[in-house]
Image (cartoon, rainbow, N blue to C red; front, side, top):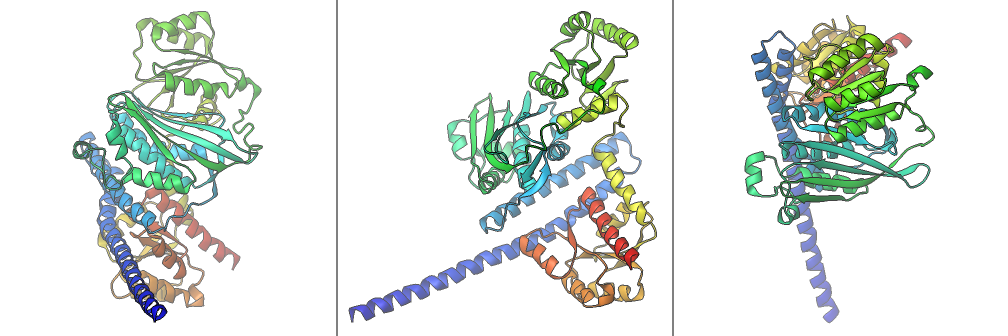
Amino acid sequence: MWRERNYRKLKTQYAKLSKDKELIQDSIQAKNDFIAMMSHEIRAPINAIMGMSHLVLESRLSVTQRSQISKIKDSASLLLNLINDILDHSKIEAGKVTIEQIPFDLNSLLNDISNIISHKANEKQIELVFDIDNSVPHKLIGDPLRLLQVLVNLLNNAIKFTNQGSVILRARGQQISRLNLKIHFEVIDTGIGMDETQIAKLFQSYTQADNSIARKYGGTGLGLAICKNLVSLMGGVIHVSSSLNVGSTFSFDIKLYSDFDIEKRHYRLPTPELMSKNALVLDDNTDSSTVLKRGLEYFHYEVKTAIDSLDAVALFRAYTFDIVFIDTQIALSREFKRELQNRIRENSLKLVWIGEDTKKRGGFILSKPYNQLDIFNTILSIYGYMDQNGKHQNNTKKLKDSLKKFAGDTLLLVENNEINRSIIAGLLAGTDIVIEMAQTGQEALDRLEANPKISVILMDIQMPIMDGFEAATRIRQNPDHDRIPIIAVTGNTLEGEIQHISNAGMNGHITKPIDVNTFYTTLYYAFEKSYNHTTKN
């Protein structure tokens, strides 16, 4: 009897626990479904704001108009970051985040970070420095997207809470074995700092250091919690040290992989003559100056540094220099300017301005923050081995121009939102790609049957009558249409949605709001795939 009573009791408890488990799972699924729906609904209007802003910024505007539109676009970007924080936190809670192990280039990652955050530092006149030691290889294997996410979040915070001084991203490497290494990252600022009580609250979800900071600086309070979880997934632990009104340092170690044989001399100057130059660096920020000095010494340059123009004049009179690097924010005395002009006339001295000040005349520009690749490209530019082009704008133009290869080809745009159709048509203006439009999945099927020359399909997911999933599935059921690349356009970036896109037979996806460079790159490869298939057949 005792055993029977215990058995019934345990059976009842098990049934209750099973029911509770189902309720929890249903609740989690309902939350994820709600987040997915809200992600799409919110991203759609943000896509309209950012897309239209981009198109307007490409037109002729007055200085005031350009400033106003840029602020609209920046505000939309800020809203998008807040939404991404909420989505990432939900993914981590649901165990949906996985860490990839893929090859990437550290300098390319640094350039991406610079493109995202440097303008914020420039607006506040904060010195942004990338201090990457030579012990850190350029070619790595890991998860570049998640590493970028952590570093951008930490750097954005550092800039937000710093009103003067500098923000430094520092990286040092420690070789564990021939292929394995541990990299120690630090983000150091000279900002408002924190006390022990505030530090204790930092990594809790939905909290700021205190309510006054939340009111003054904004934010979801999720960024650092996300960073902590992502660093943990990459095998590390994040730490913080801080002093009020002095600054803060966030640090973490992660394990990455690299082939050190490839890294022995990654950047090689084309001639021995370029390896025997003397350089002067005039910069009153010692962190920035040290990074540039080390970067030039990588090429066996003899480098002298000065923190003001009086020191630079004395060095001019004591040494002969081939290149002089001058920070655009430093005050230059008349005596220095006179010496500089004389040296340029007499000795063919090369002049490089460090910073973003386009009002300077003559010489080259090395933008801050710079890395070893930027220094390498600047040297090649100085001596005529390559053109010096702006990073972001020209890259976008090049990507768009690359699509002209497919002039006359037809894109079927399946999108029920008129504003989104206008944005995509505007982004492709000038490429001479023919655009056919459909507003539902059924209309897309009809257009496809009527026009056998369609090369690529850009398919919105959320549409009335027939959504993108059903339309793509039915297209793939027809062998005549199996060759046509289908690119999904979605505001839902949860893993289940991306897997659903693949299962429906689509070849890739573009996320709303549309990133212009990603849009051009994805379409290029889609048209290239269609072109190669047509050529072979």
